[in-house]
Image: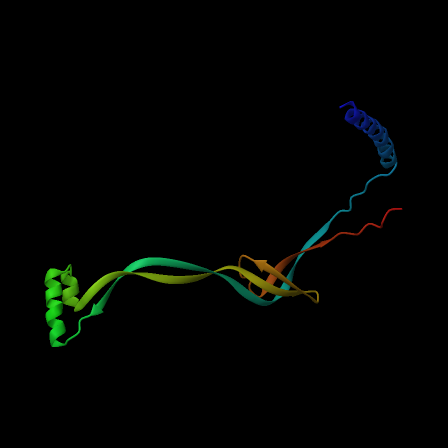
Length: 150
């Protein structure tokens, strides 16, 4: 146990003596933070491509077959109508053999737009939540790059 504590204690003492010397070196130099120059401009939109999300919804719907007009099928349909659970509306509409079936429907909705635009001769691409139209407002930020230190 003492073997582990002694090296850690030595390292912490050496580390504490190094910190004040590093702070003394930085105190001689002043830190200047460059100010960011920001303005807004407009870019020309070249192309807008919608990104779609496909949603699937399943629901059950009543599907009925049209009654056939042959002699035997009319007899069978009449018996089925009397014995089965055929409603008056189905009989009046000329429908038979009604059943519930699952029907799958797909819906596509745009969730984003890939926008290609040109600004000051450079071509750029971004993804936006809405269609920007024929021009796009852009934020132009200019910050000087400080020279590398000695």
